[in-house]
Length: 414
Image (cartoon, rainbow, N blue to C red; front, side):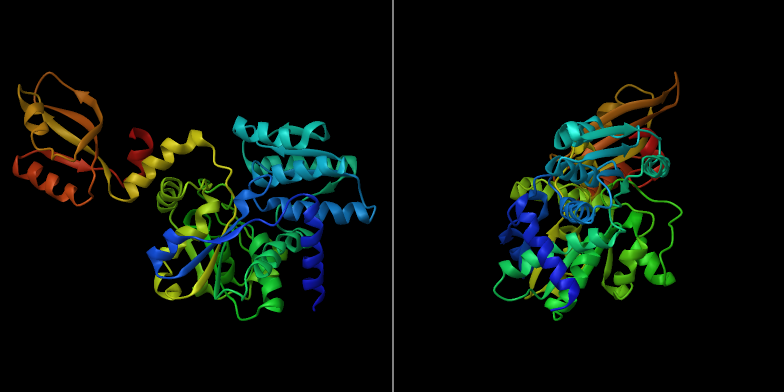
């Protein structure tokens, strides 16, 4: 047994102070869909609904055992904050959690609930970099220990407990494990443990298209900072993987790193909610979402997908549903030049099919003569209905512009 294996297994045993192993079970829906045995390792079922509790517990435990500090500081607007808060209350130690001013109230309330009177929440900065700088300055000022969400050897070791549990829950190791990647703490921990405990297990990594920092690091041979990220997948939208995590993940095959489109992730969230009753946050859905990209590779194999978190704010559900409908082609938006004459609107409405539903109708510009510009949203039951609708509109002489995939117009109009 290697030193890392031993430490990871001890971390897994120590975690039993907080919760039992998260469940690992075969998912019939996904298995049937992909012709494989798909298992879900349900990290969305920890007490804080994400795996982040593991790394926070291991890191704080070691700091306390070594007498290095008894006060802790972190910067996070999500799962790391909640994990740190939970562990601080468990050990009865003080924690200061810095969050951006823009953090949704739901996340602030949950963090406060988990931390109780042991945690103080500081809202500062409009952007995370500002929040991080304030947290680190405060940490130095009071002589506390700063808890990184991923770029810390003890955090990585704690996250490896996911793999320890997984192997103990299976009679034989799986063929493939699919892991979400943000800063890389979970994937580095699992990769390190499996390299020693089950070297025959293949790994696949998934990051959001708008935050593909691991792919960028592998291409450059070192961690590099992305100039821009899409923050929709907030639990994994990281501009740069950690130095500690890349020391492990640098050995990954770039061909085994997948990028999941944000709109497709929305469709996966809706599918898992409607079909399986499983609530996943965007980052938590990454491993399931990427199965479609590796369908040929996984057919007939035993695959474990780590669902990393279920802290989904249901106020986001309308946006997620909207993006899912657009991705699947069931909803389109277009700007129609509508003639300003009696009967023109009725003529347009007569072109709609039985499965077409008007979800949005708004005059953008209406003059007293000639034409008016109308924003129209159409939702249908079958994506193949749209080519027929557009053909009927063309034949009737209507002039229109499909803006469904126009990011600039969609941002202002939809």
